[in-house]
Image 1 (cartoon, rainbow, N blue to C red):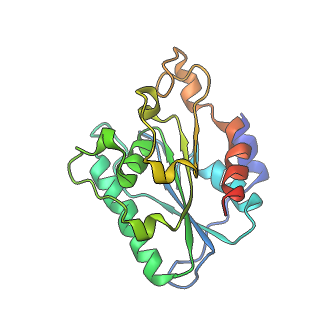
Image 2: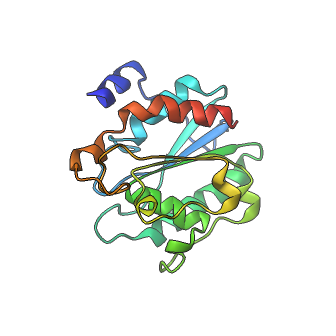
Length: 198
């Protein structure tokens, strides 16, 4: 219900094509397993609406192109994420990035950042340092690596927020499966966190 309400009050404004316009900040979202919607109906879409409202900058968004299914092709996700950032960095030299990952998508972000627990993933592409410096914030929700004690590499720690709803079995070892899709109450905090790091 909270996510539906957030979408009503913060309607999505899809940006102009990136080749024609450079936003100050590009929000790059890796959706969760089986998640529908442009950026993802459970997290990406409502969070992007909140970011549009709260960030003190112009904002665009990009959905990471990867299967987000039970093949768990994190390599394809990391390759697309890094490729997009490289392309945007060339086209928009002043642009900064916010990386968002939900559930399996959080693992995609970890793979792109170089977290050790997923360094073995086939086809994984890691963000080079010059692009990593342009990442203003990393926002993770329902992160499976959190459940096994992993965090992002040290250079990203101070700009990473990681939300795990109480009872979520994916990120926190809880027993409430519905908690894994109940992140609506975290979006204001996440948007403020990102704004503080711009």
